[in-house]
Length: 323
Image (cartoon, rainbow, N blue to C red; front, side):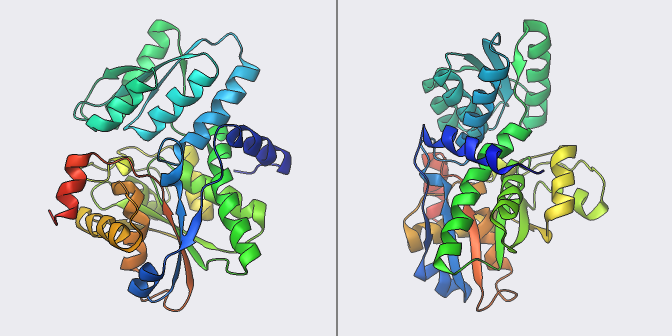
């Protein structure tokens, strides 16, 4: 997925009208654990606690500019995408209906309602919620916001442009960057930013070992469904890959690796003890993967996405307690 310099700069103007750039830090204790220099990109520091807000802002700006007649949007989410759509829709005076599966994060649901969205609970997983959102778009005449789209990726890329440009200036561009994969906008945004910034960092996608559709599809070079059973990494709970994002993955990824819920929980604890940052399951998956592959990257500079920190208090307390 290619973007012109003008497209990236326009996305930056849109994003920075709503939020500042997020930081990246090289945490010494994480580096000691992995035996390498570890730069963490803190997308848990956005106004919504996750990277998705960037894509929501650019998507809604483009929608308001190109389709001004649209007054109501609908989308499906496990939480962070829905928050981004609600946040950005409100900035343009649009109504938003968000569909979540039953049993979704209580606190993410509350956050979406606080942003003014109409929350609908339907189905047992994200795929069922997404299919219901598509039906609502037809029956109620709403504009459906997909979970992967060019204008979403364009916004997400701004975070990774910040990351690569800062580390180019520091003379410490990572040899590898680990990025969690839900439906792929985070990975695609990093790939676009890598091209924009002219760096040679290898990109490794990270999926849940309990939701392996993207890893399986990457290895088979064709879309494959896989069951979802993760109890912790809801941001990576994908059953059916998006063909467009899979194409980006096939073209740009060095590899795709899987991390278990136990590995993710350990990474959440390390992020807290070593950096005092809160990460949700998907937000800690990149560190879990870097730890899994630490022998390969000894002595190198490694980048990780801390892609979000929106974890329910009860879940987080259990994780910190070692459960």
